[in-house]
Image (tube, rainbow, N blue to C red; front, side, top):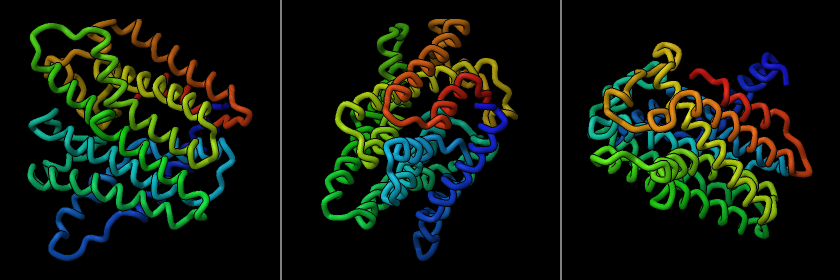
Length: 302
């Protein structure tokens, strides 16, 4: 796919995704107004909207045409955003800028940022269950299965588990092994991408084997995405990225790049992304935009 065509399609699709996500955000009213404002500030800070976009594209890949994916699109973006809000806190990565804007804790204070993250996580599941309103009774088991995937991939066996291993790794004196690093990347980063693609497949009508293939495909994408993030922390531009670069080195944090070097890291991003596309091309239907989106991860600069 031509890169200019790809960019135009991506811009249009991201706008559509944001419209869907924003319509599920809470109205800032009452005594809890401040936390609602902080939640909305965090979600509306921009970003690639990769996870809700993946839900929609995979859903359509398997022939889905309904609206039951919309609450899940919003819910997954809320969960991703809450993880970033907490990640930026002084007790975690201590970042003051994200996506070119001051982070939530800088604007609203640490306590309110913690509550905003908590609020987004809880509100995400309150939002996701609205998917039941869009399906027939016989389709409700699919929504229940999608909810189970969302909970597991976001929780202690997924993203939170990866974050735990990441924090503990920073305090260890001995260097990380490659197995430990891949565990962190798989759970901290790939888990939510797996959730996105599996939920899209489940609601779109994918069979069990196809869902397993989607999980593997998303693993490749997530690992490649995180490696590229590590690469950009070394060679990226802070203005282009919208956040500080070199924070990993300043925090004495081991990454894929510090273990394997820039050259191998870049090669592995390409290898993993191409393998992911090959999985997508094995299905009976094709989604050329989705394939191009994954390959674009190789070349992303922000």
